Length: 180
Image (cartoon, helix red, strand yellow):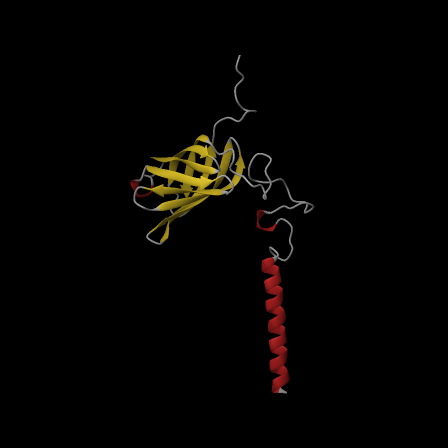
């Protein structure tokens, strides 16, 4: 009798593990729109990255060039700072400068300068700081000339800060002022 109970528990556990594995490998049990994906026929909305880009777009940050200014807000201490990215595209690489100016608090570790690097085929980019710390910025929404997302900064092997940001970039062709 005890052996039958052990087999029943083992069978139930095996079914649970199999279902859990299927659920994780299929993006949440086949739920359309999970993890921000709205594939063809899922009834989801439009993509949240790029100009006419889809989540499968090969180059979601193709239009992330020029001067982008905005504000970051830390979710750890509500510190707000003014941020600026000066971005150039070199092939499929993004390179540029990062600047920070105090908002309601000084910039993290009083660092006001960093260097941006990334690729146009990614949704995020890295900013390396003068004190060897670094931050990852991920675009949640990217509709030039506006963008917003989340960032996480790391130092000495741990998270130093994280929060959100909003940016406004150079005018797109549609938003550019008419020239006489």
